[in-house]
Length: 174
Image (cartoon, rainbow, N blue to C red; front, side, top):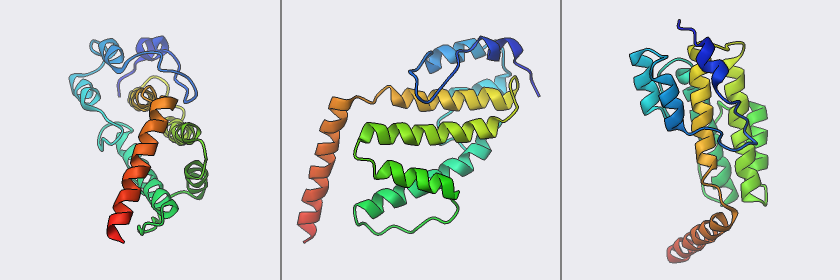
């Protein structure tokens, strides 16, 4: 397993409640000469929904269950039938439920982001300078990239548009 002492120690710390300190493209430029070609290819195509690679396969199991629970909770809130998932940790289930029921959409998204960061921290564990740490960092960076699109005004506008569209669909059914 490769060691990335210089690379990992030179990267800025990532926290779910902070802004994106470095773009993913910049991160890739740091990795280009430091990681194997195969790992670099994985990093280039990495998304939060990727399924294979160091740490990523473990993350994929969690993320799949996380998405299922989130979809279930959102469907339940909108009185839409959706099968209840059973492979979600009870604490994660409680946190997702609280986020979905939060009246502030931005706060809800930040709560969901925090849950995902906590899971990545758990998966990374004591790894600091190896593939697990590198890919955990990359996934956190991908999650933070998504956060950069959160804008309260445009978020409310989009939310209103989506609710109106759902109301129109419901009306057309009845």
